[in-house]
Amino acid sequence: MIKRGRRIVSDNKGFSLVEVMVVIAIMMILVGIAALSYNIVSNANVSKAANSLNSTFASARATGMAKGDDEGTLTLKMIDGKLYAYIGSEVDGHNATASQMEKISNNAMTVVLGNAENSTAGTQLTDGYEMQYQFAPSGAVKGITDSNSCVSYMFMNKKRGARMFFYQETGRHDVGIWNF
Image (cartoon, one colour):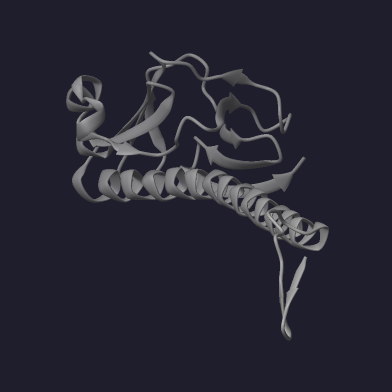
């Protein structure tokens, strides 16, 4: 430090310890907020996927009741790690590409085909999976092209799960959500 008259000129060329600690504290707060935001968004995606599938089942059932068996066919496919849905004729659904279908889930979650007895066990869906449900005018499922006869679809990430229950005899469906 050099004194010139009443002014003090300083040659400091760095940050003080207090300044560094303040910057580190601010960075820690921002990282914490980002991690919490990511967790909230990924949990919301699980719920959104189950609710989206639930509303797709409702639309297919309503279409089958209004327009008849063929138009009320719901086709579900796994393409590139994502679950897609198509409502329409059985043939159109089988031939539909991802761009013609509604995306139900993204690839940041696991989709499992399960049953009502066990809430987390089941078969993880992989690319190439296809299932069709044909809704009759009564609202019940008329024909199933897969021998698994599933009753639930589970969407899971590391901390949360959402499950869409589907009762084939009546065509009813519902969503349940749980934390791990």
